[in-house]
Image (cartoon, rainbow, N blue to C red; front, side, top):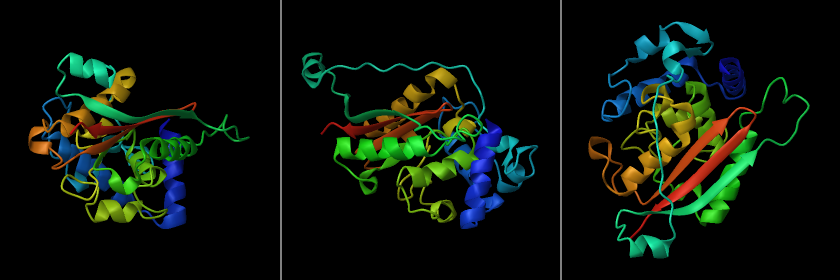
Length: 245
């Protein structure tokens, strides 16, 4: 898996000039976010130099730019709006879109899966289903299994135009307090990647912000959030969640 996302990152670098430092800044951002999350595996600041000088796993991903596998569990209770009212669930969050896609077949897929097309397809369907656009999303929890993966997902989810992901990280648009904060939980790079629980964990994080219960890492005024998870093979699940007013 590291080689798949490393090669995708390198292709982005060749095409758009994305630098090793820009990829590393994603890890710095997510580790900073995790210092405000008591459920995160790592809750320490991780300077840029530390990230860039860590053991190289598969260029341009160093060890600190790779997700950390952890034990964990997550659950979601799903009911109709009518049932939520009957049960007095005043913290309920509305599901505006729930989408699952898989890759279309390509000749190269068995050797080198396309880790981007299933996300692009799922995002397009999710925005149409939810009746919103990328500009309406207040925060995102996405599948940052590697720093290069997070960079690619900015564009695949429509958070910016093609080739603009590096600028987004440089200008702080995806950090807490930015235009569209991404992985305020600390992401898989720092909160941790509990594998089978990761998708629901992302939903939990966004729901926590929509309820206004995220404490120091709260995205102020959040009303619509997006979650994203992928698995090589490849499959992608995206949810658009909304605060119930």
